[in-house]
Length: 589
View 1 (tube, helix red, strand yellow):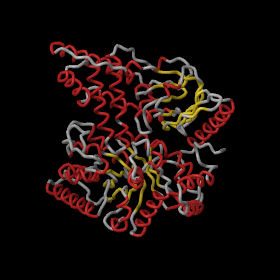
View 2 (cartoon, one colour):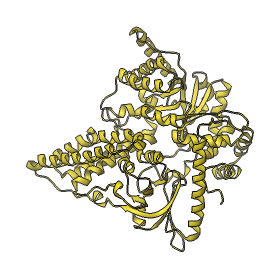
View 3 (tube, rainbow, N blue to C red):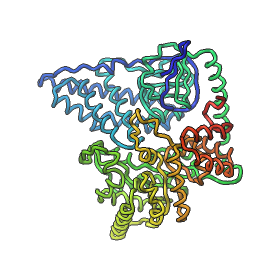
View 4 (cartoon, one colour):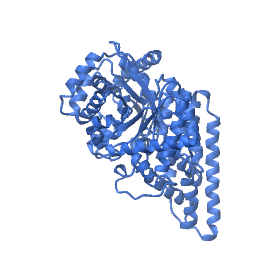
């Protein structure tokens, strides 16, 4: 937090949704939900306490159902997120464990619910996957909703706010966000949350500026304070000075003009001035996200994360259940390609139907392909479902976290077993699909030349590649400053991977978050990458950027930045060189 001499306060958080808004603050106060007392419950009163909890769940669930029912057509794409929350009200981890805790510990329902929700949160936070980590917010939001009724509080209806304001809250659920009426709510900021949370996804679909993960915005902001929300940079400014207000009003006008320009041209292809076409695809977790991918003109699905299908059940899905989802996806996208990544979870206890495995460093432990190879039956089931779905569309098979030659050899042996089983079972399938591996650990980069001889394509997963290359824990705020996509070390790893793919005549894709950030595009294009997969919402912005570039200049840019020794030098150079076409940045400074 920075305070100017005149009292202007700037707080930095995480960009939830790009854009800028200026207006008066409106605090959504749910403080009572956070103040929970523990008291013992006599054994005879335990059933009554459980009933009190169940009644709170029913009321919270009814409220949530009312919100879903009230959704207009323009918000219908958020339905799946809200229905996910509906399921969480009776989720075994939250609902069942809370009842068990009331019985076993003989404590009040509020305390039991808080204890369980914290335990679930810790379990999810150990998962080394930004998407899955972000799901912890869904658990907390559902828990808070139930808690509101347990503590006798009155839930707050965002739709009842009748002023043109900026919402300031400790947290907002997707249900809250879906109540936002665009003619009244200019934007929102929250203490909690992150860019991959469902609330962030809903905010992006509403196209209203938001900043999340501010930590203590609700402490520093008072009702009716003037706020500037810069969702592009992830900052808020409280009670700005006149000069700051003037600067941001101009910036807001430029942003709105830029957005109108993007939407007008979103149907145009991503082709550079000198005629090089980029293949921009979408990263998705749910089949339902195909709608967004198509709306944003994705050329295919560059990464389908399959974990959600497993987490959505209380047992491992069957081959037929997986086939149904994969087939639905490929048929919806056909003839465009769909890259299905096999299960990328660690062997930790976050999943109630996986035996708990104590690991000191889960991110370095039994996760992704390591878990699959140790649990071959689960792996074969998934591979068989993917091969069967490939008979109905254009599928590529992607294996996460390969770190050595031995692993890909074992994977190929499992695929062969799956093929033999399918042949024995006389099932319709397609075994001739491209096999790729994710390049996301340094050893895979170093061995890329050799690994390229074993597969049909590479997909660079920058989220993990940065983490493992820089040896940082992404969840540790004390070292978060080292998580830099434009680090010279990271760029050299990407270039090594690209060169190995070129040398062995295989395709190379990028499916990490790095591909969706415009500032990275000049150097990625300059290195030679033309297959990029990203969040669907980023595609129009990257398209616009690509259409303003030429490959010749990008190559010169990449050559120059590769000689720099620091991330700051690289960043400054790109900001200066491409300042006229980079979106969402304060270019006049």
